[in-house]
Image (cartoon, rainbow, N blue to C red):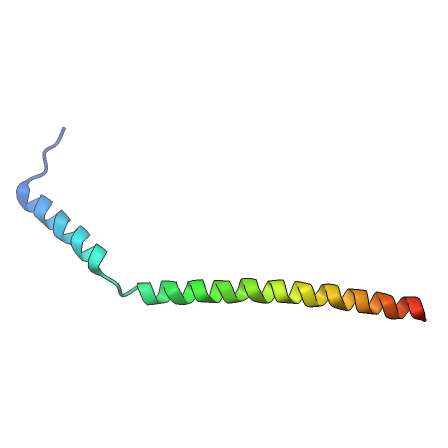
Length: 64
């Protein structure tokens, strides 16, 4: 098994610490999650409207 030297451990620890503290990508991820939620809500709403339209047109066609 290879032993990692102390300075390299320190550099790795510093790198991981900096990565955990970095919040620059958080905003982009939040916007992506909001966009996904809006897309899911829009799809659900369109399906409900589509079902309602099908029922309306079927009812009108049957009355003709």
